[in-house]
Length: 474
Image 1 (cartoon, helix red, strand yellow):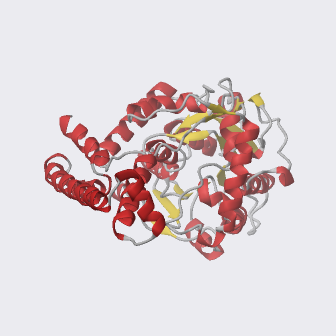
Image 2 (tube, rainbow, N blue to C red; image 1 turned 30 degrees about the vertical axis):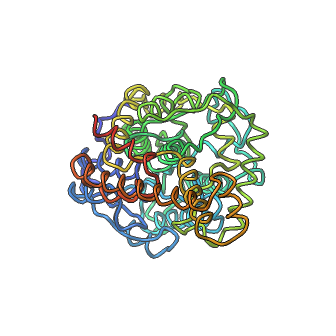
């Protein structure tokens, strides 16, 4: 396509479902920058890390549930183009909430399609996933000619539901509006790779938190495994180009939009091993990946184990106190099996070329995470927590709980109950003293987190204090 950079954007009204999310907010801001008359960010949340910035830039934030048809109709009415980004179940505990996944990804997409047809919205860009064709089999430089992965063979509800939704969207291309005015709905699907960038909510925060706690004991798969990633700005560019590809008033292409009914793979174009991709980020945060690797079949067994455990805990999956599962079967395939795709079709038909290189994108991402770490409470791995909490509890029980097992354990190590009690009292005094010192030091070094430093050091002693001392030296 040879269009101006703001073709089909200036003076038009856009709806972005999932608009308060990481990609949605970036897309809303870019639409505003390119001259859209109104941008509506539709989201279940009322606030997000980007909501205030969106409002400051004139984006209209509309709260609603994509699974409620009336909410969708209300926000879509009067718009010129819809970007459908809202989804559920991409990673972690969400993947196991099967009912909500279908409710959002399938029913919600049906509501968007119906609203577009009811209110004469000509353009619908659907954000899909490469999981519609990938289900664990190796794919090297795949393209859009690949068949959909069999619906009944998907290992996760997210991939299955997104596949159904994408097929519904593409089959709705060319459907006439219900007002029978001679116009019709044009649709296309963009299939992005794993998304990264400053503020990304899904992949990197989980990886970083696990690495911080020392809960990444091994890599998965062979070092030769490669997958695609896409920087957020590149994805936003692809989405905007896709919306231009649905315009039906381009000279020479009247009523024949180039992107109508088409899927497109998009990425940075540099497939890489996932663990090597994130290594620079983790090293910049003073974390690292282990050298040991786990074969995919063994990792799958582990993933299935956690899947069973967390499925049993289904009623509590939304509770804050229940941690994310360390690993699930679909995630094993994502990082342990080669699958990457060519964006040649998007380049030839839409003019898509990544404008941010992986090196530049990772540099921006590292800067963001370093700043985030500087502002947050740092601490040791889970093993230090277990050592201190269990150790102090055992010494207390040995000293003051009249249970033969505890008493015998204390006497085995310290020979007399007097020494056991003295060890506990001295340890407690040291923890209290270190916590008070941490409070005063944090008032100077990290005042925003001084309370956190106090309580963490009270529990962990020197294991916590050494991180604060390191920050003070910087």
